[in-house]
Each structure stands twice: as structure tokens, then as C-alpha cells.
Image (cartoon, rainbow, N blue to C red; front, side, top):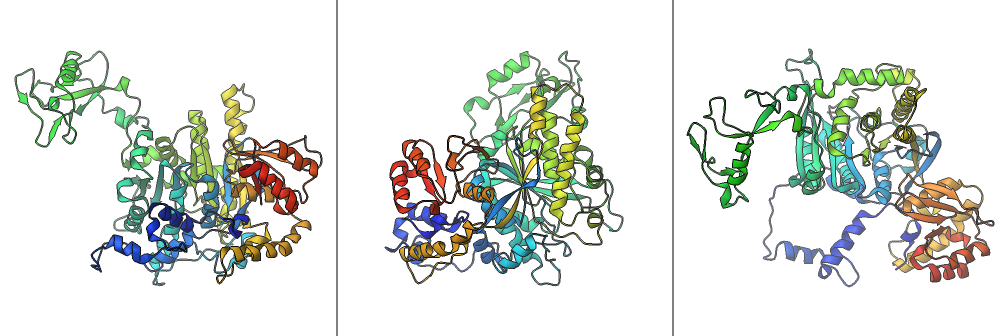
Length: 628
């Protein structure tokens, strides 16, 4: 059934989608009018009518409102910023300037189930750090006015009484949407300190489910303790959750052995195959077979059976083969419990563990130095992360063509790290960075260096990274892979702005049904959208419509010369494709072409067609035709 929502560039309505899913699974829970009958749900939850007044749950003041805010569609859109983009014709990287909750909602249209890895470094809740205030709906006009020049971020004062609640509101709504962007084998890494680690763990248990908890990494962020404290904090955490842990596990990569880990390999028996390390050969009994329970006799005659509750991980036949190949170690004197030898020459890497030292992945001072080298000024961003830290995350969690998202982009370390890792591995990972245009303090080094907003720092750093790699390639003979690496450098910049279509301001009458509201809407747009004939930006309209149609922001447009009476483009993002025009009037010749060629999707503006043309195109093209 057609409704007014079909003609508005809203992001997907997550509440409506969830209700539709319930309606598919449990139609008896709904009334004849299509409304959820909560009493029917209660009968299933508690069939005996026994009320359960106490249960374990994680709640705070504002949680329900934060959840509603997450699943309420946005009326915002993204506009392409050509002037600030770098190498836009060939790159697939994206930087988005805008409030990240609204941006995430927009991205749901085109990146749902497409992101392999999310890394975020959200504001730490220390009582002084700033937190985002979700006032888009409370003060929409002021938001748009501020967004042109930057926006102020509220502080989360310890005396506010909502010290933890405000921070949880911030994280809850954003993580709820972020989960929908992850692929089924996707993973999220979240940097955090001691102030909110326990709350964040509970939050992620609820959103991603406890069984999808992967690890809590401890990162040694300092080279020495903070002298200002009796017990100086020298570490942060990185909390890791999968969307589906069983699908994630096979996709995780090993990391290169560090010198410290490699030094653990010795050769006490002078094996000609070189240095080796020994590993346990017992396993859990959950799926063990009878062949995994037997007695092993050492060369000195000592007998060993598996410890209580465990079995041998190898069958007796496999074990005997390893003994013949001198791959079982019984200790120097031949009396020890047997272990398997793993040779350094055969190791293609190591499984990552949860203790990351600053020698291995860098520290705060290194990160500050990297940023200064890129932008030529010191102290322009507080506590950036080192690229070695993020590169290790992406090395473990992603393959060469994956998409990586950071919606608290800050100084832009994620983009820098992805580019650096791509060049090291000759890979083609893509990044999407989102940063609100938060004002820098006028007394700060950032402002004095010319950066009025944090998002300007994000863009400037990644532009400097591009220039660094381009300069390094000058004068060199480049092979095809080198050329591809240079082509993928750069990023397209988009800004979060109000829709180009006045129709997005339409508010339905709650006292009327869908059919009546559709009629009201049609009258509304007849009047309002006459404004579009005065002045509008063609590319902005195309971007907005393509996002609505699920095209990724890496779409390409190619003008079609066969159309002489209208400007028609061929749009493709590698997955979706369509012809599109935003001309105010559609010529008969153009209409006739699409009446005869119905194999490709065609998108136009509804007001470009009279009733007859619209009916004929719909009749001929069916789902291949979309009039916005």
C-alpha cells in the first residue's frame, strides 16, 4: 500500500521494521487494524498470569528515550562537498562531517550489513570531557544553523546528577544503529578507560549479546606512570564484540610474531628443522571420541593419561606418527608429560592476545608526535591514538577489501592507519570517518593553527597523509599495484544537511488514516515543491535520492549521451545500478526510451511526469521504475 513515507527521504524506520518482523512471525499478536496487542505478548511471556516484579536488567534514567531516538528515522541527508574532497574520482574512502547519530541513520540506508570492522574512540566520561547532546529533534533549526560553522558540545559535569546517564544515552543510541551496519562476521572495537568500562561492558552485552563478547584488550598507553597520582594509570581498554562470534572466528587473522614472541622458540634437542616451541596436546572432553583416551608411555617408561576432565587432542595413530617424526617432546630427560613441537619456520603468525604493550603498538607520546608530523603543529588534539595500535586492530579483524567505520573520528587516526596498512600489505581496505563539526576553543593550539572545528583536523590530517604517499612515489618507476595504491588514496567529503526536498517537513495528521494522509501529503508537495523550480543543486538531489535507494557513497555517475532532451546519468556503486535524472520535465523521447528498455532501473522526480507518463512507465517497468 502506498503511503506518504514512500515519497520522503527518511532513513529506514527501525521500529516499523521490527514490528513488521514480529507481524510475520506472530500474526496472532496483532489486532485486525494491524496494531500490536500487548496483552497477547504478555500471555506468551507469562501464561500463568504470574507477575515477575524483580529481574536482572541494566537501566538508567533516559534509556527508553535513547532507544526511541535511535530507531526514529532521520529527515537529514548527506551532500557531497567537492571542494574539500581529495582524489574523488578514484578513491572509495569517505569522510562525513556531521552529528554522528543522524549520520549513522542515513548510512543505514546504504551500508546495512556491509561494514566489516568498526573502531571508535568515544569521549571518555571523566566529568570534564564533552559529550554529544542529541538535540536534533529538540532544536532542529538551531542545529542546521550551527552545522554550517560548527557546533558546541555539552560538558558532562560530575555535579549534573546525570553523570553516567548522559554518557550512556550517548553510547546506547549509537551502538544500537552501528550493530545494523556490521556484516554478520563483523566486529566492533571500542577504546575506553576505567571510568565507564564496567557500564560499557553491560551496554554491549545487551546490544551485541553476552555470547558475542570477544575480548577486553589492555593497552599500555604510557611509557611511565602518571607522576601526579599515587597509582598512576598507564593503560586503557579496548572492548571487542562480534555481531556473530561463530561467523567472526574463522575470519580473524594472525599477527606477525614480535621479537619477544619469536625469542620463545628454542632448539634444546638440536633439531635440524630449527627453533621450536612446545604446546599442550590435551583438549576438552565435550566432543571427544573413544580414540582420544589412551595411555602414553615416555621413552623412560613413565605412563601418562589425560588429566581429569580432559582428553588427548590427538588420536593414538596421529600421536605415534608425530613421535616417529620427532615432533613430540618429553622433556630434556624424557620424563615429562608429552607436548607437541611447533617450528618457528612453519609459523605464519601468532594469535593475538589481550595484553598490548607500548613497544608493540605505540603510546600516547608517539601518537602526538605522528599528528604533529602530519599537520606541523603540536597539541592540536587531545589524546590521539597511535597508528600502530589501530593498524594492529585492522590487521587482525579485516581482509584486503573490507570497509572500516569510525564514527568518533577525532583527529582522523583511523583513516591514517588504514592507508598505512594498505601500503604495507598492498591491500585495498576502505574507511568511512564521521566527525561532528565541534568548535575548537579559541585559546587552543588547534584554533591558533587555523582549525576552527575538530572535523577540519580530521580532513586536514588525512589530506596530509595522501600528500605524504604521493610525494614518496615521485620519481619512482611504478608497477600496476603501485598505481592502484596511489589511485585509492584520498577521500570524498560529505556533510550532514537538511534535505533538499521541502516534502521532508510534512507532518501527518494523527487523526487521519494512511490514505487520508497520503492525500494531504500530495496537496502539500504541490505547493511546497514548486520551490525546486527556482533553484536547486542537481548533484545534491541525486545524492539524496541514491542514498534513499540504498546506493553506497562511492557511487559513480556517467552522463548518457544518447539522451538529447534530458540530462540522464548512469549511476553505479559496484552493486546497485540505475539510470537517474532530476530534470524538472521529462521529454516524450526520454519516456519512450524507457518504455522500450525495461531491463535497467530508472529513477526520476515525480513532478517531472504527468499522470499518463507516470502510469505508463509504472505499467511497463514495474519495480524497475521509481518516481521520487
